[in-house]
Length: 117
Length: 109
Image 1: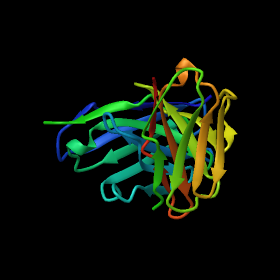
Image 2: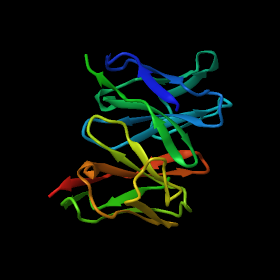
Image 3: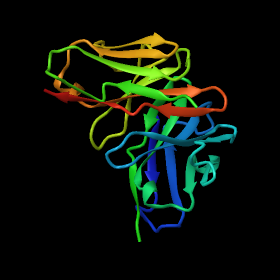
């Protein structure tokens, strides 16, 4: 059973860069899956941020594409999210998750990131 | 971009009742549609994938149906633990992009 765990700062200043890491255990990040980031503003719905696959190819939400970078570190079995030029609108719970064409079958517990000075 | 519209926004029912949740896509998504359940403070849980296949460990009272643009999640007899928020989700082939519906809150009446 694969497990995912997000880590990173819980507070980021406006105009700064949000950086999170997702550690994967119980499975290889080199498998034929997509490794994704999804966020959820407080009291709101789920928003797809983007993903990276086993070969390192990335796809991003059009609304966030200019600010998002997702990368993978196979040696550490983890992947990361960088979101630049953050504002209060980026305050959310950030989830990492594993996906394929059948949906998201494994999720991290989520981590709240607040953008505030 | 495919837009998923869920209805109703809120559904108020009693344990033992049946529930019907709808998800409509702005264009055909074939059968690549999934349903999730989310409880407060938790990550979403995959219930149904490929429109009608129950994920491992999901009770038989959850049934998914539909194809193309119209999909339904049916819960045959609500248990207390079923009261939660439900989301549908689809993935576009090209460009690769995932979309979630806005959610249906299933609350105890």
